[in-house]
Length: 316
Image (cartoon, rainbow, N blue to C red; front, side):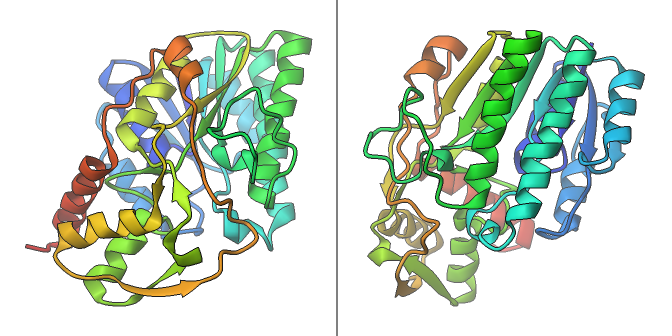
């Protein structure tokens, strides 16, 4: 039994791969080490893996490569974490996001159903909800009004996933991630950008007076949800995976100011059209179907992230 982890050099994918390896499972990783952020960080994630994952450097858009991986490695489960990420960056890159996040994902599902994969876990995003009036976000809402190509591409993949379940019986569990953060986090995400700005005493752009609220979910809690989904074939399910406690950006920054012992230099600007006012997870379904129980609140999670940052950058 072999688990394929796409995007296995990334922030979430590498942590999923490590946990699988620790449990004694065979893991194959596909990652193209693209330059959306520094590829050296992704190679560092791979270097930290213990247990002998087979790493294939390649692009999930390469249909011949994907077919060969499924055929040669007897893939039985898939954790599809690979994607072009970044809501704001996607605004000018719609075609790229469609190719990677939708078309390539459909290709993976096609190979999965041909090889009788037991469960296909598809990473999606809370961004699919857009500016919904239904707060907290619940899976029975119909998220048909994405604010950018990134969530649009993810929503399209969710719909394709249903068709593959309906036509071929492929078990697909779609996990809508909510603002995942923690040690080794992506440098383009707010948790690392705020630290960089405070440490370097550089301005940080703060949208809408810092009143945007986000439901931050610690990496370890997210990984637990992914692992649980890999063990539970459930037909077709969409499941929110988030902490369930949105926090205003002003409070988020204040926690870091206290941890670091320096004030943030804040530049207040209007939010881009890509940004919803709030992300807020109703995780009832995750608790029921995945026994999901997020354990790390924001203050502790940011403390862990700051401690890692200090060690990583040699700050005493």
